[in-house]
Image (cartoon, rainbow, N blue to C red):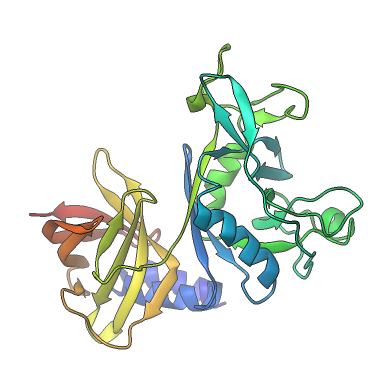
Length: 314
């Protein structure tokens, strides 16, 4: 009910989009839950991790994310309407071989959440509930009847947020190829003939959505995440993250609704959101560690999808 009401508010009153974001964030994700941004050649999506429900599994997953071991890994298996799986292999184009990433010790099973569409779970060895290590899969169908009942139940430890399943479904729909023993269902992009190119593979990078910078408005060019602290007037003081939506023909960013948090106090160089003009203004935009632009103005152009288009910058 809250989600449907929020959608009606957004459609009817675009100037209250940030209120819609806050309502959505309240209904979709707890502020305590960790968010991870996943980038692929077919687009990006955000994961909400179930920190309190599957703490051991989440900690294990974040160890791989924060160490960078998932960066450069490939989606090595897809089953249409069932799963998209990764977290195991990288590819060396010059040597034309796949190499497994370094893995930590296996972890205890924490099955508590059903394997419904959009959840992310850990893969494991048949007959051993406590054998999960680095490999994960996203359920592209409702697999509760199957995966909840076998091998102690597969631990679902997070879910894909907002419209991210459109990207996952696009990966799931790619043509699959048998490359070698153990890699019989690898999704490839624009593949015509060997040798295999890195560009043919669905490569991944992952980063935790967190603003560790003292600067209020920071763009991370590795994860393509813009972290903003904003004074939205009567709507309050907020911090939130945006993902880069497009560069051409216009620069567009999309608010990640589950990232919205209330700020306890204002900060220097805080951004502002004008509810009358639907403009988000950043006095300074830091890229890396240096101020790259000043007076950056984004216009809310799609209240339903929370997309802002760059209007001007100095």
